[in-house]
Length: 159
Image 1 (tube, rainbow, N blue to C red):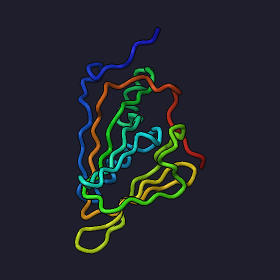
Image 2 (cartoon, one colour):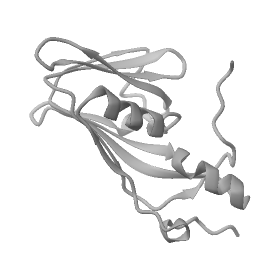
Image 3 (cartoon, rainbow, N blue to C red):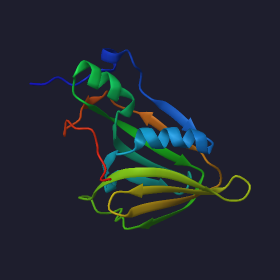
């Protein structure tokens, strides 16, 4: 039986990142690319103005080590939180569908006036969620230990 990977194996700590500008968001977007999760793991707390997703993130930052040591690729559960959300819109995504599995392709920000704007989450299969925000405030936090990626493959996209 294969044993799950451990943070201690690489001497690494869980990721805890915050984006308040587009350069920071690009880092979070790159690390969250190809994350998969059931649609039921998305939540919008209107009163707290917070949109969150519990996702299974491919550990892109670990890829060079995994390949050099010829060990399995890893995923980790992480929480992606967008704060100061004023409005949520979705296209091609049934948020209530418990069987729907989504794959995150990108996170983008369209700036508006006075720091406000729109965070756009784009999914495989042409789905998207648009979050109108008062300001850019996105966080990504690993919440479990890494585990061996069930597919044992690096995510790939058609060229």
